[in-house]
Image 1: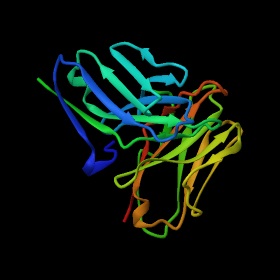
Image 2: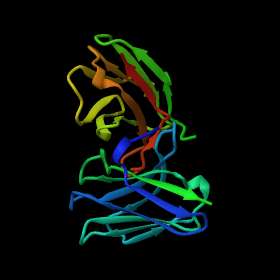
Image 3: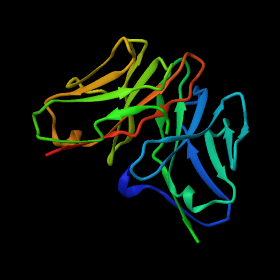
Length: 112
Length: 113
């Protein structure tokens, strides 16, 4: 699945380095945030989520940071691998709703 | 594999036609969501069903409709198709309230010629 096409911001990192993907969200009332990874030809794949009452959450090789003051979300990937190459989307869920609002996505390219 | 299945994987049709996309949620999930992903607009929420009832509506055109059946599978109907409807259509599912994570299916790629 190519996602947002021509104007995706791209992050290029060397294999083994850490990656940081940033996202600005729009609604200060959003209470849940989620990161997805989308590889070519596939649907978005859940990576990690965080609720608004937390600042940081860690998973396997991934960390999500939430800064509510500036409405900013980041995804950190440790020891980036070629298999991490994909488009990464952040999504927010507003208060009292289930629907997700997606960001435009960032393409991560990992080179040897 | 997310456990969400969608059929067909690819669909090619002509303008003015009608198509039906099908989604089976993960076992036990009651909510089904439909999203459209196009080059121009990214991932856009269309509609949500919860246990057979419409729960939320997004930017869904009047030419589009959906339903969720008693076995919880869902169908998205697209009619009077236009060239601009060409896109990837994803279905996602989630469980009961409080289980917010939405798991996405592999999508249906629709091409309108």
